[in-house]
Image (cartoon, rainbow, N blue to C red; front, side, top):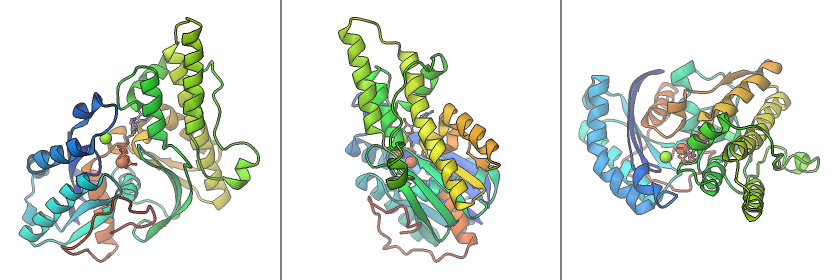
Length: 343
Ligand code: ATP
Ligand code: MG
Ligand code: FE
């Protein structure tokens, strides 16, 4: 099916167009520069930026794909989770386009879309699969038996999301927002000199929090380490701190993801969300999956962070699976649970 996807859950206005598993267009307008000086996304600013960017981004995507709205089989839109006002802009736009062109509309889960986007890179996802979802607002291990029917959570972060930890540590180190890319770059020049803690990996945690994560203790440990240096009047080795912090995050995430595959007897691991763009999580996951004969699927970095193509990819999967579309009353849900694939 030819499906158009609209994404506005955070600060990226994304419109993607796919045919089956083939990516035809992926246009993004980001308001990230407007938020950078606040060190985080300002909801009102994001909503207004979506409103301004929606129509031009839609036009660019249609031009790029060389199709018109009347050609598409369905429109998919992120219904949640995300910023309430930002979601509203995308859902309202999707309804208007669906009504005008007489197309079915699917309100989809942003997190499931972070998983589904991999189909554009590697084709249909073998089921069952384990999905490691690591983004700015979420960090979860999921068991995917049927991507169109719902996913089962195996565990999740009990405090900060992985991306949030990157953003907070970057701030501590004086690196710009969002913090993932600059930490990734700095870490390449750094050495693993500091043994930062691996959250929820003590023997007892491995029983009670088998597939859960915790990153706030790590963030505090980095803050204390940096402060101690500063108090002693010594320079902060930013590259070494970045590398050591990044290793702690990637070590826990990939170890638990591989353990989940092995304990569930599942041979496919897919990683999605903005943190999946990280070079170290990609290399470490590959190393560990190779060791146990697990097939690793990680989309190219540009598809890991928010975009419209991921929404279109999930929409395309839902259409192909014969899922029932929503109607023009479909709600947006800022707290949409990861288990719900459609609104
Ligand atoms: P959610 O998907 O939970 O609603 P979000 O949509 O804001 O949150 P994404 O766009 O999926 O999040 O991911 C953004 C996050 O990914 C940010 O925290 C950012 O720092 C992080 N990130 C992006 N690139 C990298 C990288 N190379 N290394 C580590 N983290 C990264
Ligand atoms: Mg963003
Ligand atoms: Fe996201």
